[in-house]
Length: 233
Image 1 (tube, helix red, strand yellow):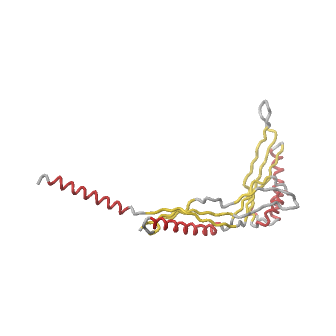
Image 2 (tube, helix red, strand yellow):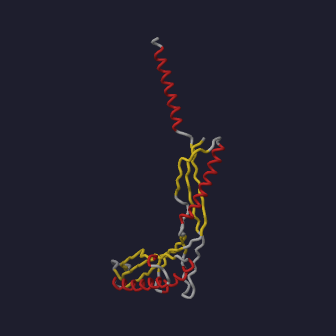
Image 3 (tube, helix red, strand yellow):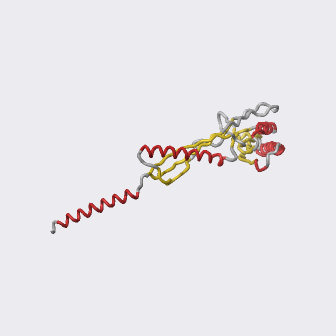
């Protein structure tokens, strides 16, 4: 009888370990995770211009006055062209000393440079070239960028999201069936960063005041990536 106690204890320990393994397996169901993307192409319906004036003078006051005079003309010209005040914003304003670069000796301040940059939202793409010409004619001598945008961006991306989910379901179903299983309930859905830039940029080339600047808005591709996890049955 004494010899049977260790044997009984060993059997109970083995049974407890086995039960623990079974519970652990039940707590961790089989799953499948899939990443898929969806894309749509859309034409931009507005643009954002970054343009302004750069002036230099021997004194900071003179540079500021000259720059302010130019920017006032540009702002008045934009207003006359129908651009609302809410669509014009100062995005950069700098006053910088300009130094000489002597071969010997210390550099010294020889002038001051003022940079005043505006960000202008153009809500009618057809007027974009004419607006650029107007700004340059009125004294804007710095065009940094033109960015094309889609006003109803989120609604357009919803189409890409639906396509991404259809692709995820199709791929997950294929993998599950190939592994002898079927899809259960969805456990997690997340949207990761898009692989494409939902804005477009173009270079600017000014021809003459008689012709509008050549600007091609083209089309923008919107891409959405989803990560989805299902339980397997």
